[in-house]
Figure 1 (tube, rainbow, N blue to C red):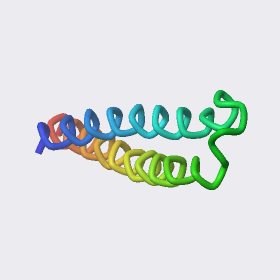
Figure 2 (figure 1 turned 180 degrees about the vertical axis):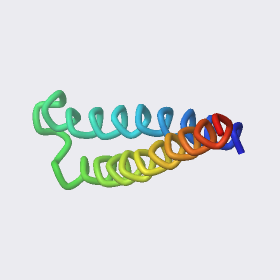
Figure 3 (figure 1 turned 120 degrees about the vertical axis):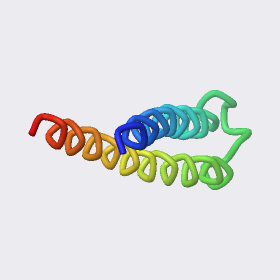
Figure 4 (figure 1 turned 135 degrees about the vertical axis):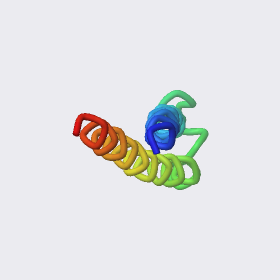
Length: 76
């Protein structure tokens, strides 16, 4: 059970970084291209990036919970 928590935490952190990168790049796209990319087109990247960000946050929280529970179980 201890390795599962670590794997979940690592995957959650990597997913959070991916979500931040995708959302940030998609949000900067209309600004950096001087309006050649519309906000509607940018939403095709912003929305999935935000979904990955939120989903990965919950995976990371689950990983932290598993690690804490496993440490408490080993301490007893």
